Amino acid sequence: MGLTGFLIKAIGISLSGVMAPGAVTTAAIAQGARRRWAGVLMAVGHGIVEIPLIFFIMFGLGVLFQAGWFRIVVGLFGGAFLIWMGVGMLRDKGADDSPSGRTADAGPLMTGLILSIGNPYFLLWWATVGLNLALEARHLGWLAFVLFALVHWLCDLIWLTILSFGSFHGTSVLGPRSQRIVLQICGIALVLFGIHFIYRAIEILRSA
Image 1: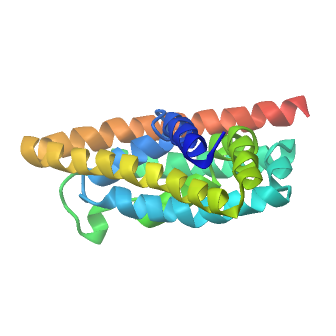
Image 2: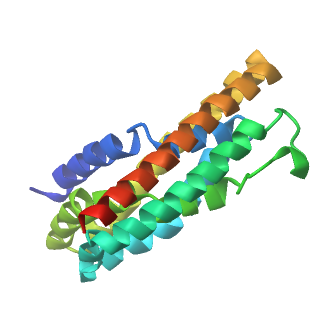
Image 3: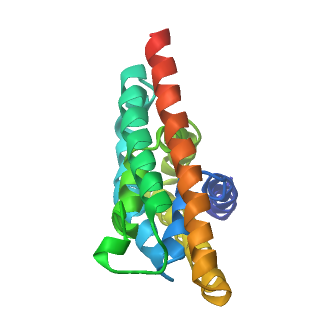
């Protein structure tokens, strides 16, 4: 397969992971309810973790992500952060954008960064599917590898921007009440994702 064919395949596989419903999607919608371009900052935070990660897995780091103890630590950390964030949204009263009105809001950039570090499914994806793509890119040469990393991150950037932009304009048109509803729904979803992360970590611990 040539470079063009590989990049087309990489885009398709990347989008299937990027667009899958999950904690990052939920956070982008919630952050977007307040900030039109929150998705851009989330993608930057995500990229701060992901771009170096793509290069590191070439040196065997992908094996670390499959280790039970590592998945336990990541699951507990990520789950706790999601619950903290979700509870903050449930306590949020709505349109006030002052510091007191942003309970448990880490900001879009830090949210993107922390949800990347603390998401066991993100790390597991890179230890399996992502690793295979990275190895194939490396086989095609360093240009293919760099383009793969860039294209994958652009998929994140475009999708998260669409989510936050759509959320912002949707809640702006429908008014403050809709913003509160979006935050409440996203808050509940993040708490449930957090509980699931912690539950999976405990399951791994029990089976160890």
